[in-house]
Length: 488
Ligand SMILES: [Zn+2]
Ligand SMILES: [Zn+2]
Figure (cartoon, protein in one colour):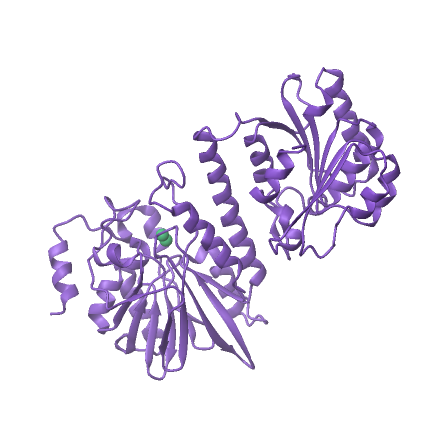
């Protein structure tokens, strides 16, 4: 009897949780037919709990073991595809959580394969879930020996297949994203199997952090994930990459292969980062870091507090075309609501609305009217900021041109271009321009400032984040700090 089997028997007296314990887990663990994703890469897992087989002439690599109850499905799926479970030589996982790791002990027992686990997760994995920062008192599995501890960037090779273990910590300290090259006809494609970047309910980042350094770990993970191509996009949960729909199209003969989805990959990573940034802001607020939080309104509020600081946010053009949930193929989701929340978190009474359809200078006139309403109610002009991103910045400058208020604060993000130069002669107020050096539109306000003699103050901040025009799509500290601190 192999060690895992002994452990399994011992563990039966302890609470052992598997897929059948709740309705939700059962739904994630429904049997689904296996299929070839591309080249020698196969989907062999359950409906949402994924498992992937990399088949080679010298034996196979299996990534993710699912719940204990997923194992018979994996076994059956391999058989359906014409593979033998006994030929699995290496067992890998995305992270040490019960829905991906619990089946590994049983798989090791059935195959004799070596179990490789990323550093940071090896302890919790070997202990069958004990010590996990979130589920360590609740969800256990059969403890299983770790045959080799992996380190960030390490390669796992077998029969010509080379996988890279990319450490993407946060969700668990050793959470692993796997990358590998797979043949797709004439082409070679990079596959990314996302470990996880989600923040489970109950996780704390700043205030009483779930483990020391977790906020930095998540930040590193988003940096790393944004650096991967995501050409062929897979993950530990099928729902994350729309596996069901893609598989349906693949089996119906769709070309190119529907799993080639770098845009979907970027959108999912951007959304994950947005959620992370929102939680950071929320925890900062709870900790009393910074000013008391403000509020968000679509128009000038009915009751105007002259002591409050007002900020009118004007979004980029993409929301005119796509609405509130806009997603750019180049820059991912436009985190409009997160941006408004971050501005309110910094103490502003935020006024912003989604412009409908093509909107030009009449909208600038509308904004100028909102500012006049604030001034009329007794708000000093120095407490009003117009913040415009991309086209919104052009409209903010146009509104400032109409208002003729020297004390007005205007911040434009990636906004100056040909059009704004024409507004220059009428410009008044204090204008701050922020853009990324890598912005493909080169939106420097230099020429505009040079032709705007009546400005009380003009400053330009050039960030070197390599984010291109995507800088303004998410509430980043790098632009929030200068924008909300203007004038200094
Ligand atoms: Zn997990
Ligand atoms: Zn999971």
